[in-house]
Image (cartoon, rainbow, N blue to C red; front, side):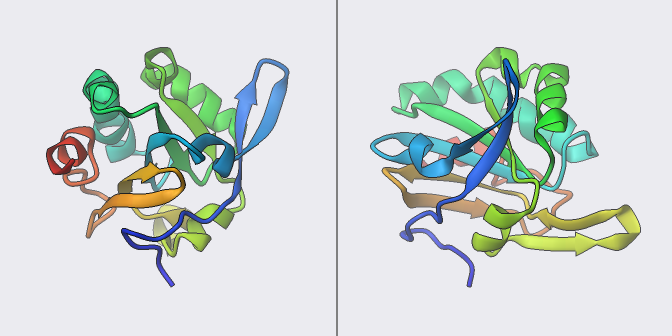
Length: 162
């Protein structure tokens, strides 16, 4: 069953590249008592993800902060090394976007947002969506109908709905 607006976010352990190498964080530690934006996408270094989705949140980070958002988190079904390198390459890390990997797609599947496109080499990847989470509850959720499009799930699209 897919998680919807009004539902409690499923907890998951996600990975990131820390100063000492790969590390993990419980998503609940990022969301409890906080207002966060989480955007998910099919994969690091893929076209729309790199040219539209991540840049949209870099551009709008300050506007989200003005609306009380404590942190913006990007989640992708990738390992922490890829997410770390991609955050550096896109400027997301320098902009303060938290890059978290979901290497086994556990969070993505718990969200009910996994898809596969074998001809493109994408297996158990995430659909493209963005949400506002307040103290662990999904208060706004916007998902694209096509993973190659970034309209309602982009930074500007999410801001317009807040």
